[in-house]
Length: 340
Image (cartoon, rainbow, N blue to C red; front, side, top):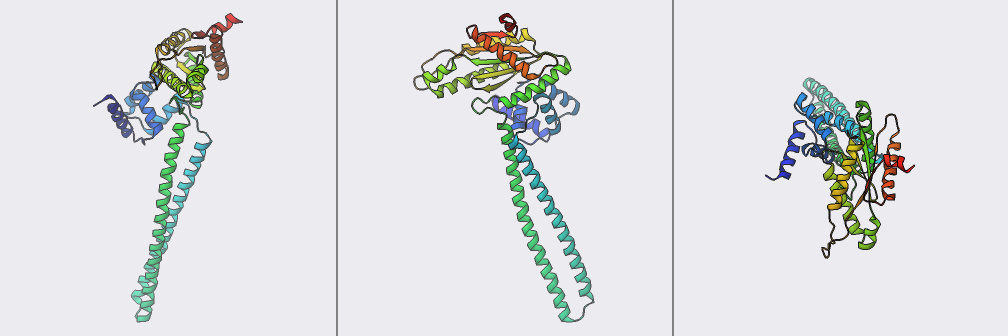
């Protein structure tokens, strides 16, 4: 069995143990656990598994909310409202069926009692006709309700699929596959609160591809997209088990490093820069090797009782300081004091 199949089998087994519905968002959660991509996630899941033997859907949602935050945009809220409306409609079907069944049962019971005491053949035929008509009407109502229920069940299934797709896509950058800015904001908010509560450090790294416009202008946007994907894959590989990488927008990326102080974050950022610089990009047509990719990176550390936008501003300012100093380098927020 290859490694990919083993990972998939483990994910399926873990979700089955907890009664968790397979979905893109849930699969992503367990993939990060099985591949040990997030040390905090691994620790949280292992703790629950030691105590309860498995991770239920509720426990999974609690872990996800604590570590990654929660973001539901307007489309997701709309889908949730539509699902709730369908469920209410289905409940009304069941109540209607219950009332019709009670009425039909009472009609049969009364008809049977009357029929038992009736000796006139005409009265007997009339009573039997009423009971047959009541039965036919009940069958018609039941068939109609069954059809309506089938439609509602199908609509619920489609809404559920749309909801999972929307939840997954609303947090993922379609080009690179990394978490997007919305997911980053939710994760940073959750991790900052956790870091402050636990009195542990947290650093934010802003990275920007140097001279990215040159790739697009010289080789075309298709190659520019390949460069973005290569940098994203490199960051994801380097962040495995260490931090959370996301695409912030354009050619800019962010990495959240929970538990890392400024000096440790600087070492990690230098490793990012070296690793990306060692990668090569080739044109598809001629396989010709083109310019190397370099990154400029800026780092800031979370301070107590500060708004997160100030942390973001300092990391972004450190990034631009790195560009001012010649690009292809790492600058921490300490460089901002030197420049003042």
